[in-house]
Image (cartoon, rainbow, N blue to C red):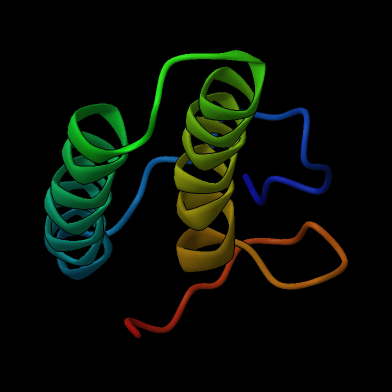
Length: 75
């Protein structure tokens, strides 16, 4: 069965899982830098929350085409 919408679960391919792991590690390193270096306040909170959102959307970019259908090729 092919997943037709962005609302259906999509199991990443093994290569996509590895790519997502690498990107998640990079996002964590940047997130740690934001947390450590930015001064406390609403701008820091905004930056960190938006970075988290971006990190989640990276998984979509790895696994789906712009129209929401699965990116079936690895890469």
